[in-house]
Image (cartoon, rainbow, N blue to C red; front, side, top):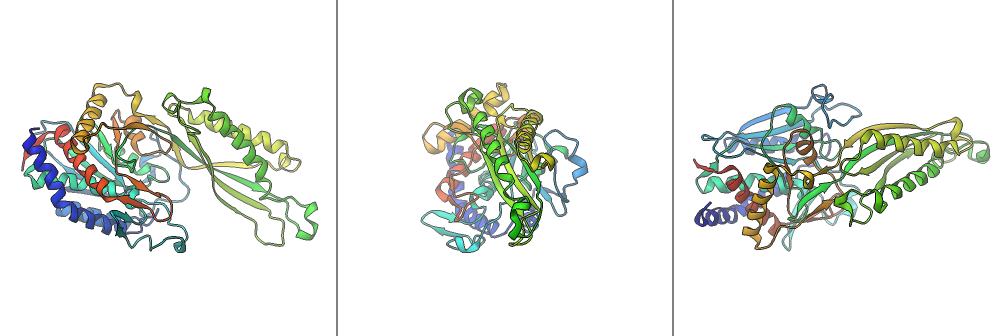
Length: 430
């Protein structure tokens, strides 16, 4: 790409940035937590349709994907779990095809009184946009779309097929991205602008969600010694799981990408329910837990160790040995993924193209490193032989209160994405 075209594209992003900011504000105002994504997806489908893309909007059918590698088990149904894909078909197909992927779902906002301003009433303050999902990852969806808009403003379109994906379920299973693969949306590379501060993610952890179901022996609290507390029974089991967590984080157990990362794998007790009455010894509890996994770590082997640890600790309890806990797997069963291990020519070319675009925009080298989170990149990298580049804007307090995204960073990522598309896909005139 010549310098004149490059400058025109960068300027086009600048010219459109007020519209991009307004788009991001509107998208963030939709409270698209799990099961409530429909209005946000309607908005995305409308915006893609207005731009002339062929829009595919469909409800995910679990039966279509449950047999595929990477599927995560679900509790309940997928009523109203809707994906949206906008397709650009190149007239020339002289370049390399691309998936621009992002997720529309956001995590619950928590107690509203702990936000400075309402989470779905986005505001801009000192160059930051605040709101649930503004950073994770609706800003990425905006940068993907407006990168394409900037090319069009310059009279260009990608000279290869491009699939713009707005998917659900990233925050709890990834089955939305898997459904896109099942539906036939594949390409030579994927770009996912998750909010990792303009760095390229070289590796990501896997995630395993599981529940512990415990039973106690109820009695009146006045005679608590004759019962067994179904909530307190979890304490030795959690202690044993944390000891396992320490073993997995030992230096000699780490994946090479995490050799210099302190404690990359985290066990989290995310939710607990139990008991029925303050003056009754609780008869039951259910704990929801999350454990991280390294790239290449076997999920079946991880499950087997978790089960062994839990049962060994249970058998050491006078009560639990005769009332063994039940382990239920639900939600994430996500393998780790390391782009760093992809030595293919395609991967190296994609990384080089992104680095060139990043340097042209920022004047700096592209930072690279692992993350202790997970993304939908694994579906493309592990199951579709497609290098997945995770590179997005700077955000803070994602999954927390007062989540925010740096708008200058969004602008740079949009410019980088536009240049990446131009070089990776090539350009044709519209």
